[in-house]
Image 1: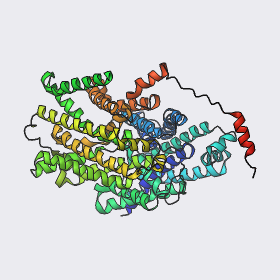
Image 2: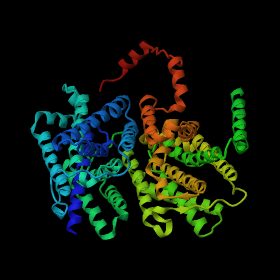
Image 3: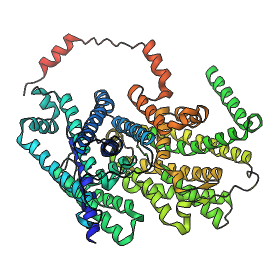
Image 4: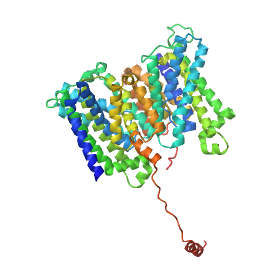
Length: 286
Length: 335
């Protein structure tokens, strides 16, 4: 039971990180990118490749993973978002990010293989340490630190306030002389950094697996919808709730209906409280 | 009149060529491929109304296809129901599942709906794996063939073509007449459509249920063609494939998605290196189409014609009667 709770917390931390990455990208571009989960997948695979394949030191591999995440975030913005947003307000971004996600997922599948491969140990530790195993505490700790850093960045630095300004009202921010396009690109880079570091830390739990992206995209979105779109606190709470619920349900009923329970949670929230726990009610534009 | 005649002739030639395909095809595999395309098209035609006309981004239709296949396999294979009845039942079950899925999820905005359909396809494959007494679990289940006169591979081909033609005709009627107009209005602006009296939610629900029925029928044809299905057959990538067929072919048309289905199914078979790339190739194609020709390849010629020789815009010169206007403004009492 204790293992189930710890597993749930650790998975919840990853879902929360995915929901946060959604939030960071959504705030400046009003786009929910399907590539969100793929950031984690790419950083996990790159990390496993750098440590296991090239035998690089762990710090260098962490930097490499983070760089891969940032690069992927920037590629998403340049290829899939920029042109589409400048052209129309239709939901074309959904198609372009879906296409980009498919391309990267299949490219990784072709290069890395379609089997999940284990992620190397980061800290020397026995495999018998149970709930104190690093594969649980690394993602929880990393995500906790990144949430705090993100909040400090948004609230305490001038640069962070620019992001808040753009997310509040892009037109007003533009009128005050902010380069909203560049801010949007940087926010995709930040989401990439967040996903890159979290994906690297969570590698031992999720494995380096090419199909991880899509499931994280879905589960991160569920966490986001539960917590409320646009709220970072909501993203964390939603992620933890989702992680705990699925892992405890797996503990009692077995793993066969994991996804069904997660989606059930999503549907309940969308029907009862569509704006989520901490989301703000937005009026619909006509 | 002349173009109508030419169109009719082209249609007749296409029908004759397709109907006699088993006689002039080089090997049985080509007939198999044509049957596969046909059974995909039965689903894509229904999905086209959802994606192309109503503008709902359903990426998880493969779940409904799986339900149709398994319903057919269980009814006809395990319970010995007449395959044709089982096919109708599979269509009905697909329709019911589409209805039940659409009831909550069609109220959601774009991205939420796409995620809900994707989750639905994942749930279906989870159920197929978990209910192993009924579906055979991960090992899969065998799907029976149809009874004579459609028992042979060629017979199945004709059956699929017949059903594909019926479904195409149905969707053409729907798209051309009131429902299709309402759906297009709804796709372009749901608020504007609602304000002129289009029942937004019920149109969405009806179209989605119809696509569920065609998906169920397509599932039984597809399963019978494959003769053995596993949950792995109905992976998410297949659902994405259907979706990509429509988007690449062009939204709001029937010929475009038809061409998309034919080309995308046949291309990896004809060009061997593409088969290895598989989904990567589809993803790249989708990205290119979305970025370069968001209207779809089916509309490429119209766009090019517009670029090369733009339609002459009619000019209406506004020539107000200034004297009358000034007097009207002057005479208005200033309140």
